[in-house]
Length: 91
Image (cartoon, rainbow, N blue to C red; front, top):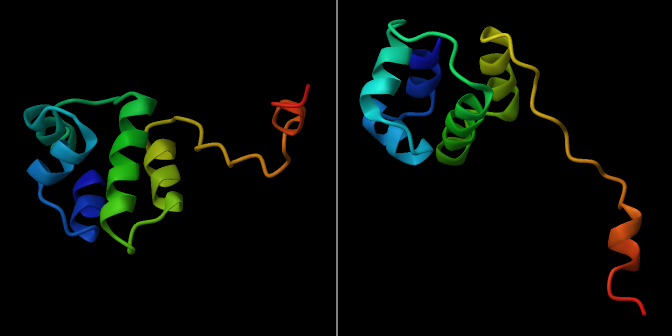
């Protein structure tokens, strides 16, 4: 799955590894099933790198990557301002 997503974004294995700050050999091993069960943070880094390099890749693709590894989806940003944002700097 990771190879297809990387190719969809138009990246090489080396470019994705560099962009996500992960060892190239480790990424190659993930892509070829030698390493399994990558951590959630690593998948989010890989996914966000793919999103940043390609308009063809979306946050939904990141969530599909996470689901394939049995991780919960990325949280949506909270649109409601928190009280500390409203009162910060007021004295």
